Image (cartoon, rainbow, N blue to C red; front, side, top):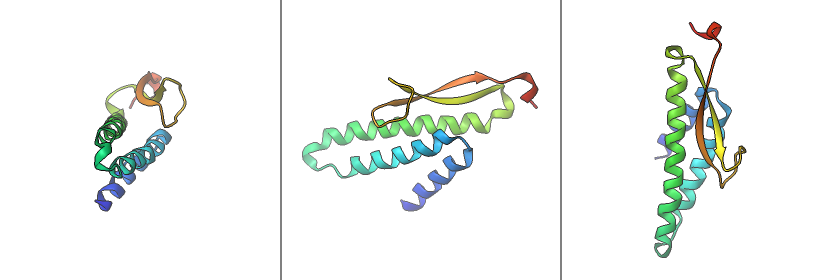
Length: 105
C-alpha cells in the first residue's frame, strides 16, 4: 500500500503542475482521516472518502490532459469552488485555456 502511495505521489510530482502536488497531500490526508473513523461514524468515512476519490479523479484527469498536450492546444488550470483558493473545504475542478498557436508542435 505504501509503495502505491509513493508511486502516485511521484506521478503527480512529475507532471510539473503545482496544483497536482498540493492536492496530492490533501488526498493523502483525507484518506488518512477517513481510515481512522470508528464504526459509529461510518457515514463520515463514506463522505470523506468520496471527497478524496473526487480529488483523485480530478488529479488523474489533470495528468492525462498534461500527457496529451501535444495533441491539443489547451493548458489545464485547477480552480476551486466556492472560492478560487485551495483550502480544505473547497472542491477542485479543471478549466482549459487555449494556448497560442506558436506553442503547438
